[in-house]
Length: 179
Image (cartoon, rainbow, N blue to C red; front, side, top):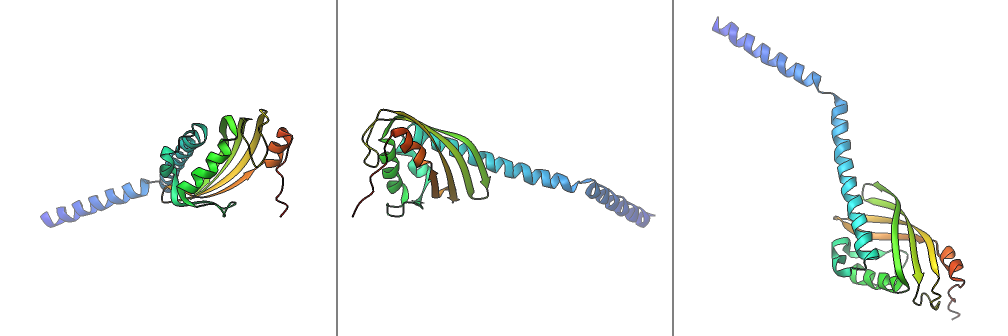
């Protein structure tokens, strides 16, 4: 009798486990994975909004190491020093030409370690930029930018700035080096 009860108990437990397993919906696992991915994307979005606000809009380079990795590089300007110090110089030069200046993220897409953003830039041209003397004109232009992350920091940037729109608004284009 005890032996039959053991088998019955084992059978009941096995049935309970099978029923519990069969009630788990595979789509629940997908939803859970999606939620984790969405949470990760939301944290990246917040990281980038903070980056734009602190570095570009507030011009606060004290937190540059939080955003730019040790080897961070502007792929379209390989002649410049890599890393946070090199990028600070590039950004400071650009920002020195505009006061006030405002970056606004219009759209963002994240795919793994790659981020694409559509940015609108507003400012007043109050300093020299690429040899163009200050015009004091208010400008509005756009940038499509692609970033690559590495170890939780920005590692590469591919900026596609609408320079033509900016120079048209300034009424001048940089002079090419004739040498």
